[in-house]
Amino acid sequence: MSPWYYFISILALLWNAMSLVNFYYQTFISTDDLAKLSSQEQILYGEYPTWISFLYAVAVLSGFVGSIGLIGRKKWSQKILVLSLCTVIPLMIHHVFFTSVIQVYGIKHAIMMPMVVILIALGLVFFAGYSKKKFYQWN
Image 1 (cartoon, rainbow, N blue to C red):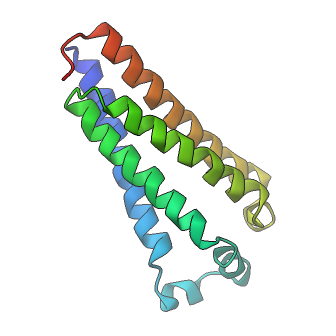
Image 2 (tube, rainbow, N blue to C red):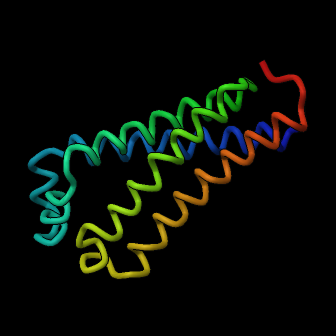
């Protein structure tokens, strides 16, 4: 197994660990922290229905578990990463098109991060598939 494989896998794990932290912060934001946000950001927080929080949880947990699977060269990791991708896409669509995020942060910020998130999730799915084919030592 080449060093670049582990380097990418560890970066994926760190990326998804940061996503878990972000999920926790956004989901369990204290009223004090919410009060520190601008009024527009407070309204934005209220625009996310419960089902979006569920998708968000599935996306970050499956991305994190899939990344652990990559490090352990587990065959199931690609399927878990596909699940993450399949939840990230509607999550990001909702974020950009069904909230006031563009008005709050501007179009550049509102579109760039969701595109990066989708591209990374897609890249990890392809990376897992490529690695399974190239390196035959997967469990």
